[in-house]
Length: 117
Length: 458
Image (cartoon, rainbow over all chains, first blue to last red; front, side, top):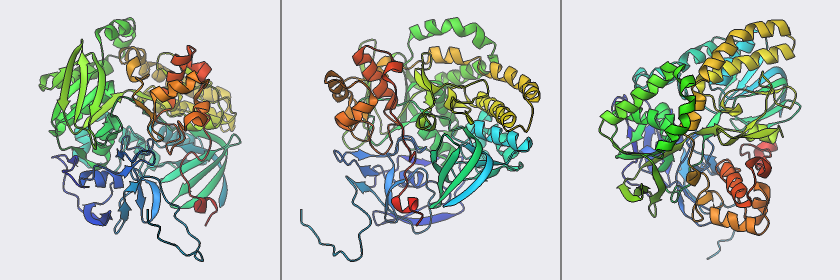
């Protein structure tokens, strides 16, 4: 869900000289290079980073310093990444984390079956 | 897994870590400085080596000061490793960390923890909503990315960082809708007995007064003695509600920045089973150390805010004192030389700590914002409320560790960082015993998340 960004560059800030392209839930975003994933998402109007495993209530970064674990997202298929501690990179695929996580690794010889819920 | 032996490992490249590592390298020790961030500075000097001049100017001279520490570090022989997540420190000085997906282990003769402070949790109704952040978080966005709220924001709580951020926002042209201060007249009364000592730290005090004056003269709506703070909203923050002298207020905003001081980050010292005490002035646990910062775990030292809140200046001095203590332990210098070199540092330390008792008394967080009402979420990860926690106590839950088995409190990804102090205080109050008696969560490695694949050294 995108809304008006809650954070934006302050007036005195020069325009970033380099930018990177990444996606959030398949939506393409262009953000300045060198900033954290969390900062990039906040300035792109992403206000909800994940839904909690317990009640699926919306969450977003709280501490920005690796303490609160509220900014957890899935980056390039790896869940539970602390987006405030990871720098943006070109072609990063970021996904919000919805509720409880699935196991990421599945043995190659086990057939995966779609389960209707 | 890569194993290597070094003299000293320092964890954390903030004020204490940078100063300590540089000093030890100067004394001929082989030092590795591990830090989780991408550049040195810690939180107080976050991004100092990368911030453009305009941003440094905006943030003020105290921030710019960090550049001296960073430059001294860069020109020293310290091996600084950025992006290093330390997930385990053992009592026999083995430090394990993860860096770019690879595991490394260092065997050190001494370890210095310089992991600093974190903001004290501010548990109120609605503090989990998107749009609610700690003031420190918002300041990190400003320091590291030059970002500020795009809409009129509300600052709420108390403490120097809150006012400093307000001042920085004013300089940046950011609109502050209100400053909702929880400080009450009786706080000034309580702090007055420390005023004489504080006056001897006049430059600091004057800076604070100027800061407050600039906030007042900017015409920001100010409320003092605010109580019953709560954030309204379903999917995100919509308003901050509170009362002043019984009168209810509501300020509509999408951005609420909370702050009520900082507390030592004790994850490592707790995991090492070092002795901790409850600090009655700062209302938090801190590890017990000797005058050089050594814990009751031989060869493991702690310096800076992690040992008790003293601020950045004090941290840099404490870092150097620990450096001398470690150098003497490793017999690079004799104890007479250690004491000689420490003498001016002790004078500096005493001077930079003078303001503390005054600040601690004046901005002591309010009980209602530390030991919240039943409906308030205490454990954000596992969504346990203060009321549920109290019901556990009624059933016989005596402390934080039992609270885990009663209701998963403290068992989420943050490993109790965000609820630990609140849980201790809620249980202590409910049982009618001291925080010391209730104790803290038993912290175990991994201190930072690590995948099984990484652990297996894939």
